[in-house]
Length: 116
Image (cartoon, rainbow, N blue to C red; front, top):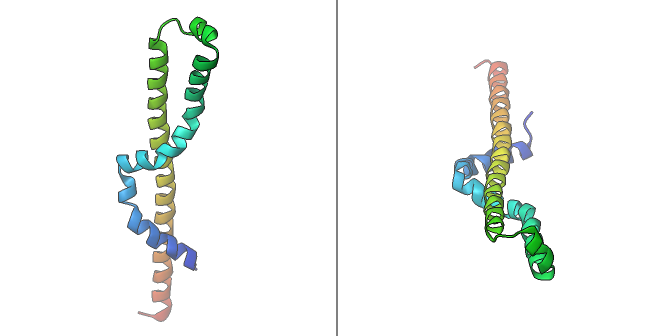
């Protein structure tokens, strides 16, 4: 028997499955968590640069390595944002498909018992 909670999820996901399936939507919705994941590295670079300039000078003789690190972190943020939200979308889509099958089977069994 399908519960009210499951019916609520079916209605919720029918409204949101297509808008949430776009690449832009996945990146936009996943970017806050991905930035929280990558911000400590960027913060560490700036702290070392500001408070330990002699160590920073030994660590990074050229400015290019810092730029490359920031670019790499930005790419990692985009990657994490997209794949995290794509994984969530796939989980919701799988649950939606399973609930639709369950609802369909339930309606079919009701029709068979009524003799129609």
